[in-house]
Length: 494
Image 1 (cartoon, one colour):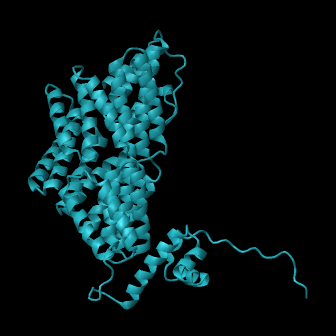
Image 2 (spheres, helix red, strand yellow; image 1 turned 90 degrees about the horizontal axis):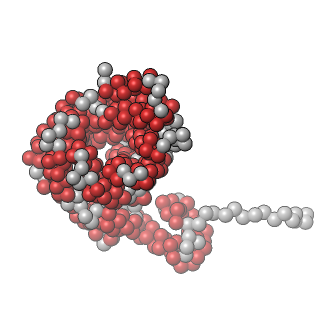
Image 3 (spheres, rainbow, N blue to C red; image 1 turned 90 degrees about the vertical axis):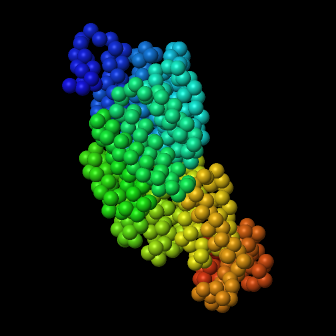
């Protein structure tokens, strides 16, 4: 019998107060959450759980018990919401955790309040709001210095995760050293699994920076250790996530068959658990492996399924990554218009969510796939590059820097105009490009008015309208909506 089950059996005691019952349920739920058993933790809360993001009824409870119940409801709303891709789940989870932290503060429980704010940071991180998450975790780690080592290690690992995911890899390594010291005497397999996983992620990204295969080899060792510890802790969702991490790295190394094997193992676990969110994430990795194998039709099917699942939730950064992969697949299949549109959406979605690195990479991918073939205008191409350069200004990744430089060359070639000896040159394509450039400028200067734009261009309104309706349909979004002319209600005399 697990400790959580033993705690729940104590509920049979008829002399327990409402507060004591609530605290027992929260303690059992907490132990299950640490093992990744989120549905079991939800069940352990019993009548206190009213659904994802729904505030529990705590009016009859004392302040301390109410704070614990709100915290557990918020934590579970965040995890289950991410797993089930429930829209708005992270926002409601933040409300519940914030209320809990305030109650802890009022009760003088500063350590509990600090730890609760680290859970709040996780919600921000899932939404892609990395700066807000970093601020909360920095404060929490400082407030917990010199307290329970394992509790501080949890906060440090969360902080390190944010730093790693935003490219601050040396900062992440420093945090990992502090975490290792905090865990020196710990036998907590779940925490050790998290430590090895984050270490593996950081080493993998350092390998990306230096193009150093040694980092990748060390990362594989760390990921393998993480799987071992998570299996010992019976933490199946996290073990599946590590299998996905291993697959992602093996894909980079061109070891596609090995990558599929790890994704198969992850898929079996996640399907059994009904974890739609992490299963969608594994499918994004699967699609990337299939792209590497040039199996574009298979990749199209897989990534479409992941997008359908991710659309239901609030994890904008992961959805943007999936949309970018879909854009690449469609580009390789020759569906250029849909490819461009979906990657434009990926850039905007990631940037609006604060996931600047994902937004920058999506912009680079759009340039790489479509810049040279002139499917987008030179002006838009220039704007995309400037946007990517701004979004990736802090990157240390050698691969990303190399991609920026390569994209800069594409943009420069386009801005210099069509060259006579350029591959696939035709006079029609050259004229078409110059037409598009000046029509776009005229529409922008005229505020979308076709009449005023035509006047600027020195052509008739009907001529410009015809051009927009035929060979320059891509510029239609720059014009004002067409208004139907009203017919006269006065009948003409016969």
